[in-house]
Image (cartoon, rainbow, N blue to C red; front, side, top):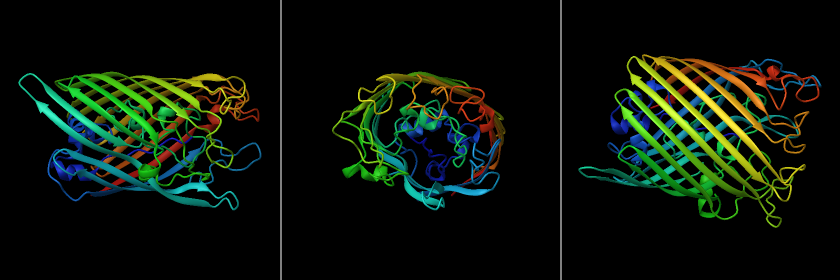
Length: 435
């Protein structure tokens, strides 16, 4: 299962509100939201006046893997050390009526996958993050209540905090290096992106309490526009099928005071997923695998020019029940724990530095984690990054991913002599957003 890309800063919204990007994004570091940016999203993207609802962004980058040869001497990253045009997105977004708004993102990935016969790289167009909302706001002498309904295609993309998986760090990373990412993550951390249709309701009371309940089903039939680019039998982009309606619940407590903003929260996702056969067609007659993800998260922001400090923390515990051994072979159940910590500092909304720590542990299994010599998913490391934003539309950054442990070991994790640090990846990028 693949990690998802994310939608980021939208010039559409700057035009609509008449505000600069810094008003919505902490220190200009898109996609991190300020309190104003969170209220804009919670109000259904409807603040301000209707405007031209189109924007675009593009990414160019370079990835360099520390040890770029496998046990047979073949290159792991076929574009190692070479600058590439990575991907681009088109957005249709903004205010539709005084109570309805949203955004839809469509992304072209230039180096999406390699042809199985010729190994030539092929591009791909597909649906990306999408979120439509209907919102009503009731303001009284003692109460401020936002009530909303959301339709979206990625669990937690509707969330307004950057500790949530869909908006969590890293905001951009290497897409072409197969060893640059954490190899095992809970399903809520990206596996269902652009695969599902989620319809839910939420409330935000007195800028203090947020609560949400959403149900997810397969994005097919009338919802197939939410998963455009995924299909049965597509080896590169298979469709994941869920049984029935799968619940997600979210609660968060928030407080803003002076230049400070803080949140603590929790969330729960229960998913029943059908397996795909080797040709990526769904198997409906033999039961499902159940994933139950429970998470806790927190966020802190200090916003007072010229200084911006942000910090996020997220922990997810996933319990898997697999009675038909679709995922596991050594047992009918297992678990996975994922931790991500991150802090950033931005000066004058131009110069920034971030540092993140990640740690994944879980149950060993000879099928689920076959790439590990000891069949463990355990992976740990650090991700420092520096970046420069010469203006609101451009970010230039250098990021490094260092692995202390990879797939259960520090050294010889695959049984062929490869060490965890051999997967360390340097990533240099240019991120441009158009008006």
